[in-house]
Length: 189
Image (cartoon, rainbow, N blue to C red):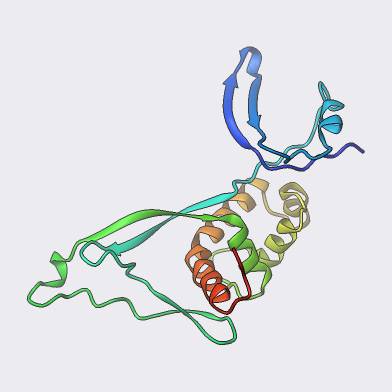
């Protein structure tokens, strides 16, 4: 079986006649390390492809005056991430409804979230498939969305969406956990 695994950037999507789409990927540096021959052998063959973004974007609320996130996180000595009480919005003499809140996009490497999930410190939430954490761990280890969806009797598109939303939801916790690991000297950059 011919196989290749690499990180790339999607550079272009072309819509061609007769319902054909062409996707152009750009691979930098030594990402292909010895895999180019295998890929060349796949030209004009049907292949299975799964693209998963390497970065996760989520939205976070900030106090426009202090520029601090409204929700803060603390990490216990055991590595459990907890939500701190929201920052006090009422400033001296200013009613709460006049405090300006901004929502900003935050980008985090998916690998940080996945490390948090694999650490068994990531929480479970209602509204997701009951086995989502186990499914996600298996996905991180390389199993395909299609295989997992079939096994757990869920539509592939629904599973992909749940994984995306879950990663966005735990992203700020993963950031706090990662910062805590760095402070302990367990992660070096």
